[in-house]
Image 1 (tube, rainbow, N blue to C red):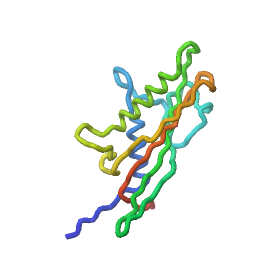
Image 2: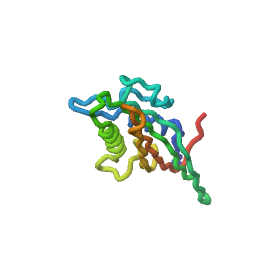
Image 3: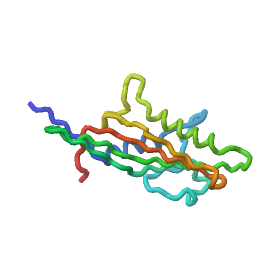
Image 4: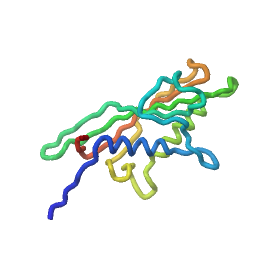
Length: 159
């Protein structure tokens, strides 16, 4: 009897990641942290204030490594765009942004019993590579772009 492993497709991985980050909660009682979530990016100025905070997931750069006799080891890149708006001109906007970044980082931490974030066994690990913040030049709006890398052990083609 042969044990065959069918690796997940990219789309299965992207959907699982999107579901995880989209479900981030904040406050007490807990509520969804993002009013808008999508995998189709809008410009920060096309997202109305009442639609923020907003989360957008886009594809980033992928890398591949081939070892003789083994499937490609893939690293899938994602870019996460987090948009916020501070309606009060007298309040700082950076705490809104950094709180959302911290919530995403916490959501991507592995469970206490695991050493790696595997998206429920779909991938080897998920890691955040960088967070680039933009504030101060857009009035009451600001955003962060987070670079994420997802390590897989090989992928099945999407059909």
